[in-house]
Length: 291
Picture 1 (cartoon, rainbow, N blue to C red):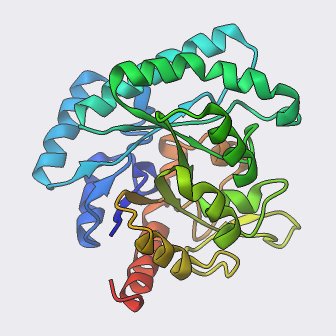
Picture 2 (cartoon, rainbow, N blue to C red):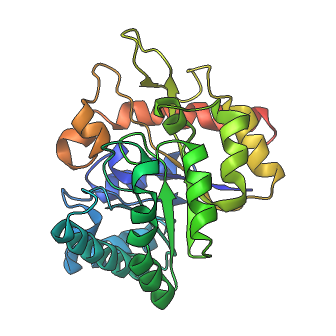
């Protein structure tokens, strides 16, 4: 059975508050993104120690580091060098929490991935070497704002990279936003399944009222069949984490920049209440499945 988790700043910038909310819902793991207004790669050593003590106090663990690795411009050597350092710092954070998974992306999308395919493969050669040396895995997440936006594109990438250190982070809602997205479950999921290392729980509808996709309360979108998705994860013996990534607010919408570059106080504002609602919905779905 998989373990529930949450991307920390979907609840709060205060790491202890995040853990307190998790305790209320029997959520044993957490996925740090921005903490005390620092992205994961910039969390100072003193705060890492604070986080370690809090995790021990609340008997919780870290499942994945939600880094922004390679959310940058393809072909920009300076940015690429900076992001290799982001990877190294994120790995340092992972080691501090006995965690093996670092999230990564595939550069800002400026055209067709077909036109830059070999560049994408080449850009991951050094990160793969680093992950091999450090005994961690890079979970590449498909996201519409990046070159690899759909499960079909991601499946091809994982196959072409063909390396054990490169795995899949599956977020069904990202498929809703993808330009050529398929039905998230079961169609897109079947593509990701052989490479799966981590899962994000986010819900979305294809048309939020303006003709564009929109994130909604988990379990209420109707397009993603979450009960069936959860059962499929259980049936395949998936024992990793499923992290809530709320991305939905009660009285407002997150703007495009916060959606693409989540983090910080502005992102976390008003996040706790909708995250609680989503946890309640997830727990009910799992209870209805007998778990």
